Image (tube, rainbow, N blue to C red; front, side, top):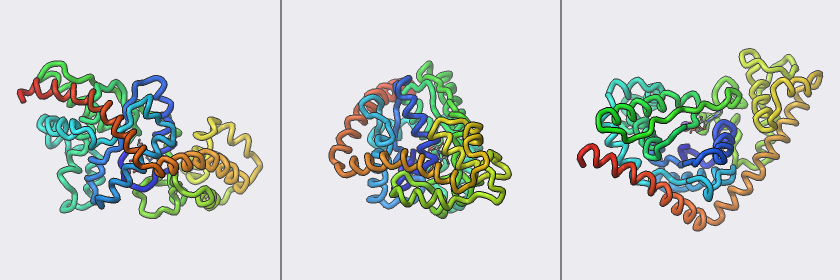
Length: 321
Ligand code: ADP
Ligand code: NA
């Protein structure tokens, strides 16, 4: 994830961190805080450094174990930028221009403000993936195109220079995992939302979180039923409840049949507060000891570097550097 805010939001937790936490038992996992990617939007240097540390602390607080997985800061492993350069030389201009995230973001930033870095963002992402000889990449639907590009680049490089990269597979988590803004439930909850009123921050104080849930936009028919089209607010709260309790949507509909939104919102509030409260506490504890956190991140960067540098050395050799 990009260190693009002081706190992660509920969608990052439910749509990404919870899945990643579970994957740790089955996979030899690599997780990074992608500060080089964050530079594709304007950043204040001191704030970027702090956001990077805070993001890493939240990964750990959410259950990413730096002793079991490799959790590091992207810029600490120089091979990322170096491999991205080499991959950029085999990426077509038109191919990169077809990336929908680039089209969206460059339109938002404006043609004169959007950087070349924003254009090559997916190439850096390909380097992030290929350096670790990755088998699977857990991604949201929105990142699937970037993993496809990564696969194309790996295959192209292998065809031109000999077998070098493993070709990764995308793994799309279950569909219920997409969380929407509580005040604007047809847009995705996001760190970069214009208004924060409908964003549940992992590091919000629990009474702020509770209030935001009680004030979430619903509708007038008073029935707790899942209907994304006509009842996006209620459906979103059901998704959150289901994700955090492991209940199915049908079970939630049964449980709240004949009860009002007030009751249902209180249940969602209690579930979210019980989940996020301890994560927040743990993250703040970690941030209270930045020297120890930095030590953990440095040790993990060394673990990552050992793998990444071996791949990069092979790449240099194959292309004639
Ligand atoms: P943000 O929009 O908060 O900046 P990112 O684009 O940095 O989020 O995404 C980081 C990770 O969190 C990705 O794996 C993405 O799929 C996931 N994610 C972000 N927002 C949501 C959401 N609203 N619902 C589900 N998953 C999300
Ligand atoms: Na973002």
